[in-house]
Image (cartoon, rainbow, N blue to C red; front, side, top):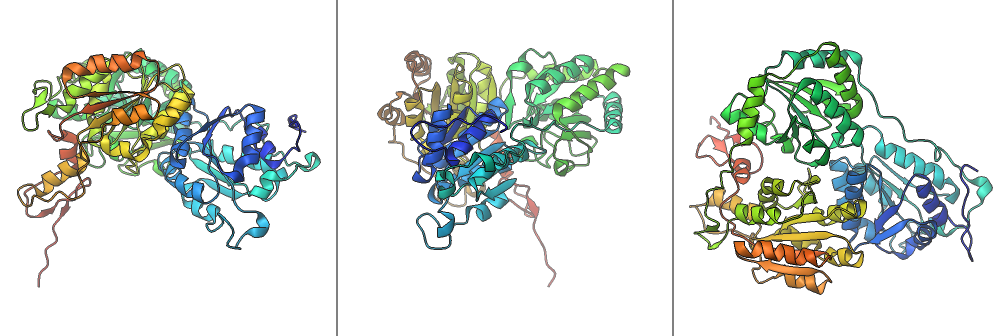
Amino acid sequence: MVFPLTTPQNRDLTGGDLLAQSLKKLGTDVAFGLHGGHLDAFLLGSDSIGIKLVDTRHETVAVQAAEGYSKMTGKTGICFVTANSGFSNGLPGLATAFADRSSILCITSSVPLRDQENNSLQGQIDQVVVSKPLTKFAHRVTSAEDLPRLVAHAVHVSVSGSPGPVLLDVPIDVLFAPVSPSRISWGSISSSLPYPPGPHQGAIEEAVNLLKQAKRPAIIIGTGANSPDAASALSSFASATRIPIFSGGKFTVLTPLYSNSSFAGPASLLSALSMTAKPSDCILLIGGRTGMYLGGQSGAIIPNHDCRIIQIDTDGGELGRTFPVLGIVSDAAQALHALTAASRQAPFSAPDDWLQAIQSAQSLPSPHADAASTVPETGLLHPHHALTALFSHLPPNPIVVLDGGEAALWAGAACAHCKPAALISSTGYLGFLGNGFGYALGCAVAAPDTPVVLVGGDGSAGFHFMELDTFARHGLRVLTVVVNNECWGMSVNGQDLVYGGKTEARPVSGLSGGLDYSVVAKGLGCEGVKCTKLEEIGPGVRGVLAKGRPACVDLRVSRKPVHPATEAMVAMTDDPNMIVVPYYDNVPRPHYKL
């Protein structure tokens, strides 16, 4: 026996117990989900072995809570959803975890093996077949005694190479069946997780040569560079080379960066540098991906010409996806250790004039700093000033989760006023709204002593606002801020840019101004306050936080002005030879000779 089994009192040791105890052996402390009778044997097994169960109001939130938990802890997040109906509700969570490369294990169940293809209750969908395109590994367990082996294998697959979701479908009869200990297949349940890959020495030498030759080198760190080991290695490398560090826009643990003298701020600052000085001529991209969070092919953040790019990632398939790169398949920390050692053998340093240009760009005020606090066109608060006031009155170093379109854009620029411990953009590569509720839940459970601030628009709030009940039931320190402009902000402003002066129609882009989220929050067991004036924000925020309970701020703002990022994404032009394709690159209008 690889590890001692705990036999429950007054009942047999079942497949559900063995599943829970296998997870416990792998270090699982908490699992997120929603009840379903198929799962009861597993739920009782989890409770008896000391795994905390955090139940949500929707399965999507449970899966995304596991993802948020994984981001903050570096462990594989565990979630559970019941057969077919719960599984279908959880699919958006699998999709976001797959697109955003998050390590989670989703446990689901299904009809008894003998009842498959029999029109049985919750048996219409083959969950393994549906899950295959959205996971790194999906499997139906047919023997309870195989659970330790398969659980260990699933977790190892989830964390190896490019992280991602995995799923185990354990039929109800397998979960409820008594286990025969002598027949258990243990697999690698007692093995440590695999060591991450290290870099090729030739690639390290070439990378150092490129960085030494650069006049304007920069480091951009992505989600894959957030581990404590990577942060320590990054600090050593930056200390040796003085190369400025920029954080990617998806997810960054910021606390270690504040004490790093090379930390320059968000990667969006590189866009400002390209307008005020020469752009970077060498980018070291560590654990991040090219694409929407780094300006796509536009060259706004990563220059699309006259710039050498060194890309480090555990997934070789990501290397060179958008631009020509020197690709290094490696864990971020291992690559940084090697780069530091190589740079100390042949020392070099980022040029002073480049560092001075960055300091000048950092000192530039917000383009909205001089705007009136109330927008004359609408008589409502300017979102920049409203969110600057909000973040200025928060306690320092919360975990900040951004959700929504324009609301997240305005908040992302203003949140520096509270120096977030971590910053998560929850919409991800799929552009999902409403993800923030699950991510905030996972973060709050992972870091119970750190306040979590979820900032989203009134559009994204509509997806999972009932999770404030979850925050209240579990006593979690989550402040939900609804940036309420009574519309789908990016949608209506995008329509204004494309169709302004052509038609007054703005279909399906408006929302109800009569919905007071602070009142709804109170009904769900939380504190709530509505702020419509700048002078109300500070007292309102301090007042709800002083109660020591989860809370909601309904922050009323103007939908105008349009955020500059929306204007950039729509890229409206009067050029008759171009077709405007909102949110993507415009394309030339075809011309045909007849």
